[in-house]
Structures are given as structure tokens and as C-alpha cells.
Length: 125
Length: 410
Image (tube, each protein chain N blue to C red):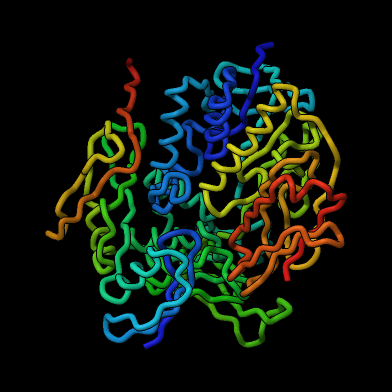
């Protein structure tokens, strides 16, 4: 089978032409770095994406905090993780990299925070 | 009047990188002036990942990328003002700032313009029809959804395939909203191919090329839009009109560098980029006023904004040491295939990074630099796309003996 893939790993967005059977790549053209080949391999077998979204924060100087999965996860779980994030709430202060939910969908998927949120300054202080 | 060595207008990606670079060059007296209530600018609302691949060799979310610079600004004790708006800038580099303390005048030796962009609106593209609520620019929607916790609608049409619109299509889908389609007036997308792939195709959102919105309906709230296909000359193809019921229209139709202050300071702007005309280190026609980031030219990747800021600071440091002297004046002339170039003029003999955008997509192209007769440099490009900025470095020896510089894409 012949197929074209646009690599999403970096902004170059290489257009990669691949001939493959099942999960065996016979011929690959257009990948400008080794990441491209790995990307295509994954796309054929098990496409991976990093989920990014936001969750509610209590007592923070912002009401939302941005999160991402700690590693790229199977694409089929992306929407489900989206649904889960709409129900999670955390308390400020929070530091970048802090884990706010772990082992989601029993698939070893952790959500980590990508923004630093400080505790809301109370009006009286 | 308080005096400052360097005043940076804007505390977003460009301003932060410029400030850190200034400090690394040994410049001590720096002030960043930011009108918003946090540093980091638009990065803070860009919660998707993919930032920092070039600069930090890892994929970061926007706020993570911003925080790397904010941490450095704080470590290096660079001073900054938040909630502070520059309301006036003169060619003598006097700055008037307004904030909660009232008006403050500053005198700077150097100004770095880093004000970024604003979005084109419905008014700018002239879509006819009713004037209901439910029409947002993509960036405004991004701020509402990612920072302020407001949802903007339930059934959404996106006009324009700029990167922010594509990112928002995915974001809205993951928040449980229906994105019906993305319509793009041009026969090719104005966003990066990888974003079309991971933001639209991953979620089966159709991209309609050569389509635009020609009517808006709604009394109070938007109730629908009419889209139509456009022919080669931009006219509506008869019979292609189609009504789509929706409650929200998102516009991702381009960015405008915010140069009102620059104009007031007598800075000459480039009609195509919308940013100041600059020399090889980002200096405008007003000596000591430099520009970098999206206020200079719209970038597709923030890493390039940071790199550009660091690069122009070389010129800032030389200016402060009295070493930035005009040695010549060569205007960079574009021949065919190219839409814009930065820098527009060369005044010294230095290694120079040129940024270009092409007029239309193409394959197997060559970028050719000549002095009018002799070819100075050629660069082969496997693919070109108006959405992707081309950056090419010429070293000083290649630029040494030339009297003119012409560039074309063949």
C-alpha cells in the first residue's frame, strides 16, 4: 500500500511517502530526520498524540490551568481524556510538571501541569 | 524624568527573549513594559504543545515555554511593569507610560519594539450580513476558553485556516463542541501542514479550500452562515451557496503587527509585512529603535521569535558601545516568487539572516541571491509554502563587495 503522511513532530511538517504492507515499511521517502520514520511507524501501527487541555483551579490567580499528558498517548484515547479533564479540579498553588491525575483509563496515562499558578491574593492582605 | 538604558515595549515571547539577551550582553539597566497583567503574552493562552523544539530541543506547551524566560527575567532581576500601557513614543526615545500610578515619562537610550500583533476582524474582511453576537476572532476565543473558562458556543464554523484557527478546531472538539467545518478562501491552507493533519484530520473536520463565508444570519445570536465556493478569480461559483446552521463563527484570517506607536515615533513601515523596515540587526530608520518578533513580521514559530530577539540584541549592544555605524545602504530587492523580506536594507558588512515568505506553494524551488549579475548564493528548497517562513543566512564575505542585492525564487 502507498500512502502520504505529514509528519507532526516538528514544524518542518515533512511530507513522507511510504510503501508498506501491514506494519512492514518497504520504502520511505521525504523524511528529513529519523523522527519521521518513527512517526510513520507509529501512524501505521498505533498513532500517538500528546493531549493538551485545561482543568479547573480553585483559589488560584487564574481559574484554569493548562495540562498535558506526560507522554504521547494512543490517538484513540484523546477524546476520552478530554472528557475526563472536564471533571478534574485542583487547588492552587501549582508548579509546572506537577502530576494532577495519574493512571487514567488504567493505561498509565498521567496528566501534568504546564503552567505555574499562584495562590490568589486575598483582598484583606 | 527617569532614564533607562533599554526599554522594551511588550513582555511577550519577543520582549522576554530580548530582555534576557540584553542582560547576557552585560546591559544592566533594562525595563520591560507590559500592558497585560502577566508576562509571556500570547504564549500563556497557547496551551497546546510543540513549542521549543528548536530552542530547547523538547516539545513544550506555550506557558512552559514562557516560564523558561520568565524564570530567567526574575533570576537576572530584570525589572518589568505589568498593567502598564505605553501611550506615547517619540523619535528621541521618550516614552510615556500609563498605569495605576498615573503617567510616567521615561527617557531611554534604546527602545526595543516587541508589541506583537492583533487579529484581523470581521470588519477588516468585510463579511456582509447581520451583526449578531457569536462572532469571535480565534485568538480571542482561545483566551476565553483557555484562560478565562468561558465556552463560546456549541456549533461552530471556522473561517480561515490560520494556525490559531486550526488549533482552536481541535481544542473546541476536545471540549465537546461541534466544529462543523473550516472554510479557507485561498486554494491552499494558510496554516502549517502538521496542524491541518493533527487538528483537523485527526478529528474528521473537513477543510473546504476556495470557500468563504458570504452571509451571516441571526437576530441577537448568530443562527447560521452561508458559505460559497470561489472560482479562480475569486468570484462566487453559481450554485455553490450553502447555508450552515451554527451558533458561532470563528475568524482566523490573519494578524496585523501592532505599530501605532512605531508610526508615532516616525518609523517607516513596510506595506507588505506591516512591520518596521529594518537593517540587518533589526534597527529601524530611527537610530536606537529596534524591532523583533511579530511586531516586525508575523512568525509561524515562537522559537524563531526568540532567536530573532537574541539576534537583534547584537545590534543593540553595538549601538550602546558606539560601534553601530552606517557603512553603506543597500536595499534588498525582491524579484519574482517572493512576498516579503526582512531585513529590507543592509547598512553594514555583517553575517545576516534573511526571512522570506513566498507568494504561493510550490515544489523543488531555488532561492537565488544575486548582485544584479553575479549569483551570490543559491538555496534549494524541497517545498515552499506561504505559511512557512524561509530563513537563510548569508555570511559577511558573501555580502561584501555587492552594490545591490536581488533575490528571486525560481
